[in-house]
Image (cartoon, rainbow, N blue to C red; front, side):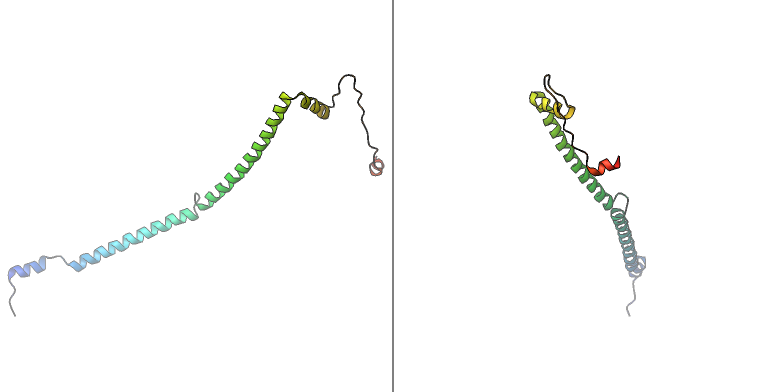
Length: 127
């Protein structure tokens, strides 16, 4: 068997073990992978179950839809009131008609007749 030279022996003993470094790197990568998976799971938990998650987004969307519907109803009501105001400002006949129907006003020289329906039998028995 050939004898090893001192340089060859030294070079074998001074070299770091490659298998040991490879195992350490693989273990470190496994830990980093596990930490990233744990972090991802925590983020998913917050997204689906947390206070500011998907449930609150759905609740806010429903609230916004309800508010829009209410705003649309109020817009239609405002448009109707605006039309009434415009009609009362520019049409004297509308003012007169409203005064007669809502306030019971009559013109000078007119006679007001109020027709009273006879009370039904059930309401006269109650008195």
